[in-house]
Image 1 (cartoon, rainbow, N blue to C red):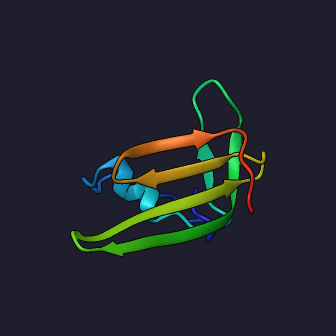
Image 2 (cartoon, one colour):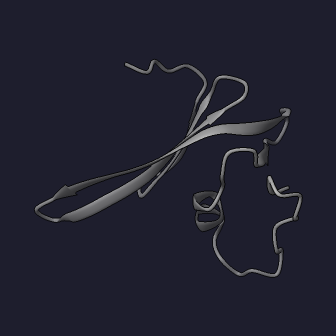
Length: 83
């Protein structure tokens, strides 16, 4: 469910990764065999190198975990440290 109360458009043929890239603070994620988590903060990150620009997103969830959506895949870190 989007933060504005509008359910996502299930007819959209985009990949799940692309849908995760559109999430905003207040959106809810359902994890299989776990509770639903609310996104508290989203960092849109990028790094430019000689070979081009790499983009990824870090989403901090209300249970304290971190969800990363990057070109390498989707990762959830249950423990992390912000320096």
